[in-house]
Image 1 (cartoon, rainbow, N blue to C red):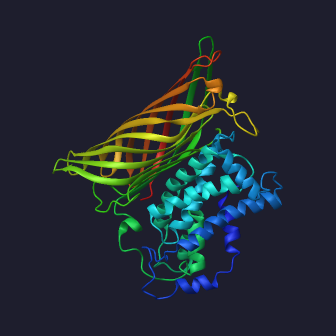
Image 2: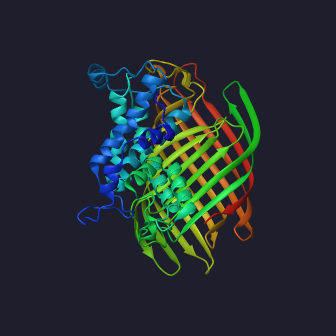
Image 3: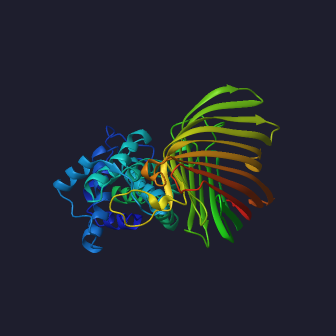
Length: 480
């Protein structure tokens, strides 16, 4: 298993000689193509950094950790490619969070070297494939390639945009240092490229278009509070109940407004939700991204505005009672009805297909995987889903909202042992409210119901119904 940490990447990158590249970046040659932040477009540097992102964990595992899976050679490469793809038995947070984050480093190697979203996306897929075939002796894992490659694109572009809101090329002194350090921790490969190119310390123009820097419509909410979770699992002849409560912290960003922005490049508008849960399965308990790839007007009048969107969706939800993750692409309709100068009603209907998704399963221990190291607790497969959200918005703040989601997981590896067919239907509904108190401060609450119906054809596997209820109360602060 790879050791995938930004710290390892950053430490090794910063140790490289950089004077020649810094000199080249500082040139005034107008024939050099640069992006909005002044980064020179270089496919060669992108390829080199993707190779380095793979080389660092390989070196660590081989020479420091003493792993037994990195003794690679041309024979192991041919064997892996000849055998094709399998599924693995890594932990849920490894497969559906750590791997996609590592993929974001591949993506950023291209994006921060002046390439666009579409030009950078293949680097995430290629970097992941190269590791699967040639970076380790483990059989190639289909789930790793999809989670790392596609999830890396979503996380990589999101972190690139978030780091852009922190950077300021006009800043100087301690403020500039703080911004560069902050952006480095958000997007380490980009931070490294700014350092070695000299752009991290140079005072020059910020991007002209706000969508490349800080969009005109940006909201970022920090929520902190307490949540209570109750869960019950029912089979034909048994029932198991569990309940617990703990504090949580949540970051909720809305980057851009598809109804108001004039530019609609990929991820010019996206939503990001990051949950940090205390006293639960993992500290990072939830990470969700919905980024607009295509945004087109359907109809527009003084009272209503309707858009067609194509989206890239990333899901990661990991608690003691629920594990759900996936990489999806979807299409939908966004609508906005103007109620007054301050009030509006918004809706979001999305239909999407999962290239890879997963959900916890009572019989996933029967998953057939090569080189078994652990018993998995979740099924992996592909499927489809939909959601419908309604929100009443006042001056950019959703004061009341309703949401419904449905996902289908058709198991490709897990509880479908011996050819038995396994399908999971996952539904959730939420009601939420927020009340401003003073300035950027306020309070809120939400309640969510979650239902998983799991159907197993395998003899001896009882169908399962899981019900989960979550109630949260919190205070919030609007940072933007």
